[in-house]
Image (cartoon, rainbow, N blue to C red; front, side, top):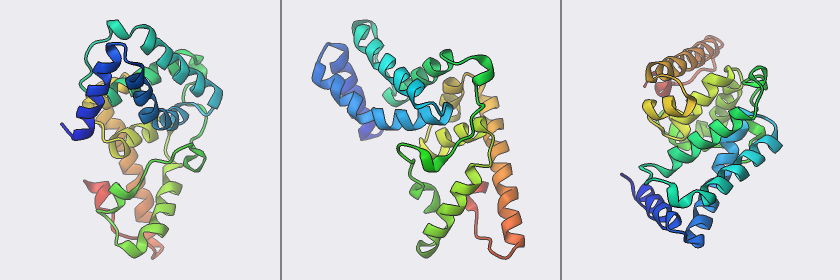
Length: 200
């Protein structure tokens, strides 16, 4: 377990014991990334903001009943996703296209690109990757985000998205297959580049 996870758990337990400073720390640490993730699920900022407010209100109200969290980040992501989806009509789910450029906090691409490109190509390829991501179906994009940008395991992604672990693997593999096809098309045009990430 990383140092940041240990620190999260420390503040989580202090918050469970009623410490307001610890609660504020958790809010400040996660509110931006939760908003960014929420906007991937629903493009209505009001829905996302209300869901985050409800989430933290419920956390404080039920703090004494909460269990220890093995991963605070996982708990918050899963809880927010449930709140957002409960507020949607079935036909509204995954109907709005994603636009990474419009996110409140764009997830970093550095950890992904460091393995596949040289320093001088980062700017060009970051732009290309963002463009390709917008071509993915919303569900595939969400799964890819959770796996490669938030570093969740397949089992955690399955729990967050309320699907089986094999289902999570399948969704991600479909997304990577789509990206590989796009990369191959670019290579045919003579402007391709190495894609070790897509084959990892």
